[in-house]
Image 1 (cartoon, rainbow, N blue to C red):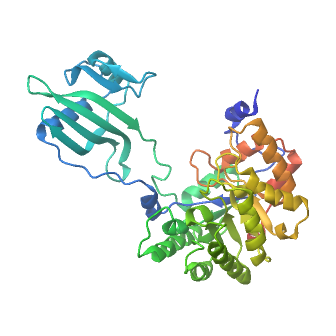
Image 2: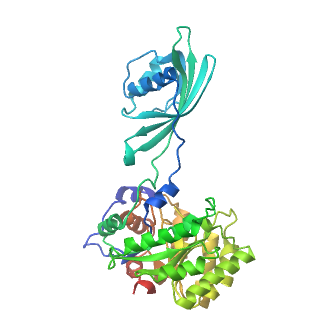
Image 3: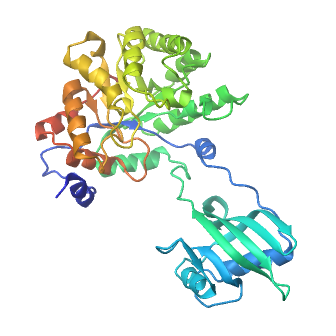
Length: 436
């Protein structure tokens, strides 16, 4: 049996007292989702439009027949439809179309967001939705091509839809739910990394209230962590390129239970080959070092050339600015899910193997890096890097993935990597200085 199939079979296995390796002492890479963050990360849907009555009747009839296979004259005789329920692509004719509709689920509504009429032809763009109010979910996008036939009735001549998977960030995640996930995994402590930097992300348009939104997200995270002071600790976050980065770090880390700083180079638009960016990041690391504030650094960026050069710059120019604090390299220098960017990680592995003093305060979390679909070559490489960098420097983390909660993430790590029980036990027992 290959390792991936084995992982799929026992992925949900819960740790028990009889197992020789205990659950990790802590999950060192966690996030919460505030209502403001959900609003930022959830794609906006086009506003609804009012259809002419004769076109609206077509959509309402299409809603009514969902989940039924009775043939009607809603479609033209030779209509086409993309069959998203079956194995074929386009299907043709009323009988085939209604057979496909009968395999679908009833209970959704069509919300039109655009339309046009040109003589006897028309089209309607719409979203399918379920629920009401706060529980409203957009489940797919649909395009209808309509034809007005000889009897004056509009009928659907073609229907094409694309299924939109549920958003991972559709609902807030608060401390209560997070602690329940930790309890299910048998994990005592959790490190919550604020997502405040996303309000200053290079992926979103700059807003005049950006700094206030970053501050509000850090404050919301702090308030959530404070509800479980014996279980959770918080890390503030900023975009290190911003002029207010150090002042926000100072303000936020004075809040009780906020012990460190999270930096995300990718989302912040940091380019380590840009000298000005390097100097700005150095300034933040130096300030953190002066105040003895530990840093979690997400080094990976969207630069397609990301790799050895970036890690070398980080190790040569930035790490020396913070020689006295723990620096946790998130995702072992990559981003996940899955093991990649080994060239970037190899820089730290080689430095550790050579006894390079610059890595003496570096820690590495492997959040999302060890997934159930790793190849044998990736498994071997990840195992070798972990041993090179030092078992004593590895930290468990699960990140923000509802499909792989902490319990499952630890089980996956245990199953996929050929480490010894002593090595797994050592990793489970690792506690970084900021949690002692």
